Image (cartoon, rainbow, N blue to C red; front, top):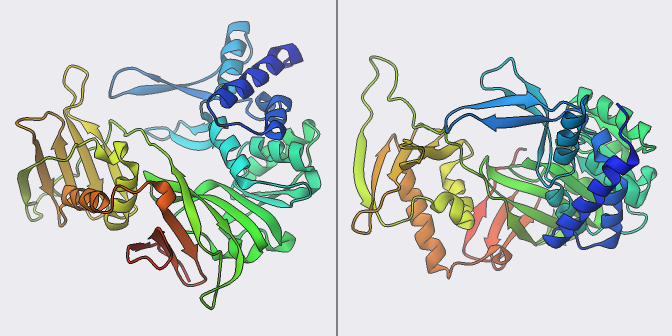
Length: 397
């Protein structure tokens, strides 16, 4: 289907204006890129989730063939929302195969990357190719390299980018390995999240080069980090100290449930009840607390609202990988909330203790936390790399 310039160019300009008004686009060169790249060419398939009630949703593919359908599709493509671009509807619930991030997140990351003319950039996570197109518009095809683990996505991105006149180097491979055959790079940007920074990225960055990635200590807790490669830090090759930049809010899923006690014949689960003064919405209203608590809770975390009554949730639910769980009533009685916990660990107690530590430290913001990466160790720290308050990230050797 042909989309005329008068259909998409005003929408692209409006998107740039919305991002500028929201403070997520401040650079004239990136504004030009947003206005110039026809995003709809890179996301011809978009799926939208329609909510039936608080428990059920249904997915539909936006219709690009009819007048009204095309308008909805274009409106969605040039909105500030993230896009679902590939969906496996044979599974239940449907499994997301590919997404295109919120444009505001893309532009914030691109501006934070601070590219200069002539910089060679490696992108980890090609996806639809839209971010690569923005980079090509800014730096030229020869300076843009992108890898994705899904060969099918790379092939589609290659075809669609070529139709727009963009010809970056695209490779289907594991992004954790980087792209050693084309290294070194002045900038490395990961559009996917990682639990720790792959050391291969550090070795492929030039001295003084920048690595930008979404560091996620669990599925629901993370922060953007901007690392600079230094030759030596305390006798170890390292990216050197860097500051955590910001965290991403995650809307809790209403499907989260505590685990079943176990199969028939298994030992009964001990459930304890008590009260708490800590707001049960803390996991998603105090993101730094949630980030720090995730070091103790582990990477496998499910959380959300449960127990709906008259369309409203009655409790927060948190479950972690070892089967430990907590339910905290949202209703407050005499200044406290009811807590039920089960499993080998007391989940809500971990969050309470972390919240108490954060208060004790003076409620530091993200600009007080940093990260140092060496070949053998990765450590989040408070205020300085030599702080007594540090948290270690898992690393693979």
